Image (cartoon, rainbow, N blue to C red):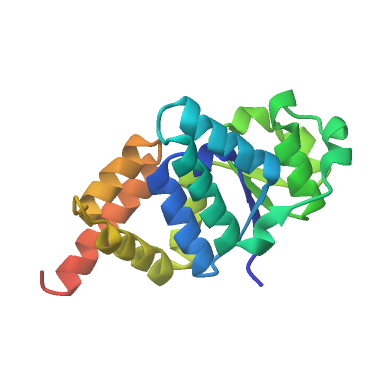
Length: 192
């Protein structure tokens, strides 16, 4: 079974990043985990920041629930108060502890201090580092997901290079640079 990873709300908010993460989860490179509270935050933030209507935000969260029915972590609430991280992220850490996750993927690394995580054998990692690890461990799956993501985007069409540029703007500079090299080298090897 793929290793368990809690995806913080901030990684699920940008659609290009969420799409890539969920494609990798479908490819079974890792097992995504989230709580109802994480999904509620996602839905609320999408609406409040003008990224989706309430109906569209609800549809997106519902599609995630349907696609990954075993991703929902429950019965973590009694652990929240004991978590020694940023108060607004205690629910995330509690869900990770309850589910025996190995990682929390988040842009908010400072909210999850190493000493607080150490007691639970947990690590918080940035999406940039997580995706670099995915590329290192599962190069064919990761590159295939990027290619498929590009192929699936229509109206307007989105190239692989445009996806890479967008991921870079989202705060994934190392992963984006490595992807550029991979696709450039791959094109050279294929005689393109």
